Image 1 (tube, rainbow, N blue to C red):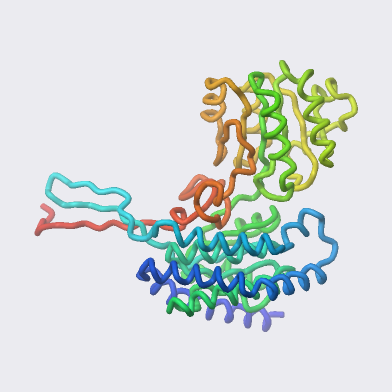
Image 2: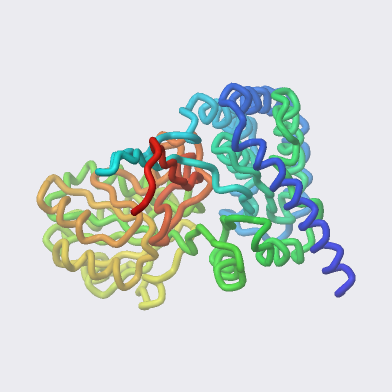
Length: 421
């Protein structure tokens, strides 16, 4: 076992050193080369769609005991392959984030100081079951001048390798180093441990997956981590909500895709409108296949609802299940979110601008929304082209992580002969 772990550690070190060298070249690569790599990779995805879908079918056939939501995340379709290709092209069309002057000022002594965006370096991406993350993460890292080592879940390894071949085609066509985008050469879990210990070789770890994976990474990593552990999102239907709007938003926020981190897991509804509106909302969602866990006040309105435990309100279902609670206004809703939420995404449905403002100002979460589905918490929907993940920490980046969030900065100080007294 130790011999195997040592061999895996050597594989990681070799990959990381190659990535480090590639990152140095990428940091200086001109935008046309990076954009060409992305567009050529998009063309390769379309040309090799059959191979990718065949690899994905083999992954699905080999995977056993998956929940419906997990299987949905693992599954590729022609439409999803096309979405990956379009995502690469959209990232190519975005402005180059590297070299942007973020701020500039002149000191009394005449020194001109500039804060300039630069790549982070080598990104280690650890993710579960979503093959499309291979393309999204590679695109964002490449465009932002970062090299990336991708370690997807073992259940998606065939799919990831097929997508990786397309990315390599793009790099070769653009004359960029192939080591800029690497897929873990082995499926062994020891590779993840080696990544987490690779301080000095990997500059940032981004985990994307279930709570177990993210918690392990946050607890064990010696490398800085950018992540969120859970997406326990709330939709709050305020007393001044338009009922038809509330119905449309909630149905989409919960049921469009139940297995993504931006799906609403808890409905909060004001007591003033619950008797009239809650039965309608329950009927809408039940017709779409949703079931429920409800507090005593909600059950007093709809007695057929199953009772919720306190733990239910702190559970990210990632499935067709919704927790329901009746609250007494904005402050009551915010209190519930602070006690049970994960600081990911919260939405209010209301026609009262003051209530919306109070809700947004009272949140600690990375994203607050007014009169919109929580499933809009997505890098593509934010105009980032794609996202490498969602961050709920307090440092560096929050919410969807796109090109700008994959850059750090340095200072340029321009003088004319000044010396310090």
